[in-house]
Length: 160
Image (cartoon, rainbow, N blue to C red; front, side, top):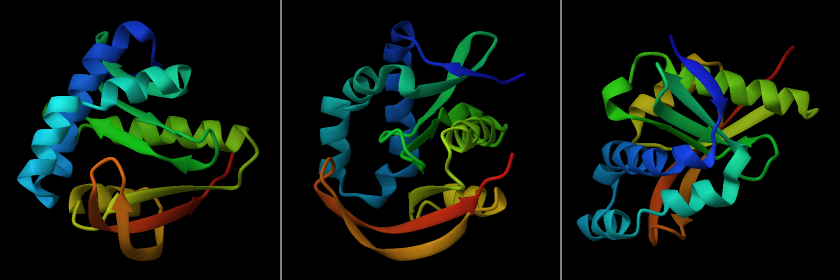
């Protein structure tokens, strides 16, 4: 059974590895090999996790982290959802997004947004399945990657 809880510093090393592996599977094929190599060398997930600290939700099975998600701006935008490739399709992302949207609603927001690379069809389909609708599609430069990707911004209405 998947449990969702707030991440703690002891989780960060495992989550940074998990995040990079998930990124390589979902985004890696969409960017140049040099970008993938840069991400592998730097693994920016560790500094992200340390900066966000208690803002990160982690999904675990039997105490083992299998995914994490965050609202980096502590607002209504879901900035990150990363699932270990070995656990895709088992409800991890759905559980994380459900927990985040509950937090967002509890903060007083009536809707939640998320952005996804348009060619990340697996994630895009999941967000549609969860009730998100497209509101914008276009090129966006990712400063971390130093690359442009076609992104889709999606929104869903929240209810108690």
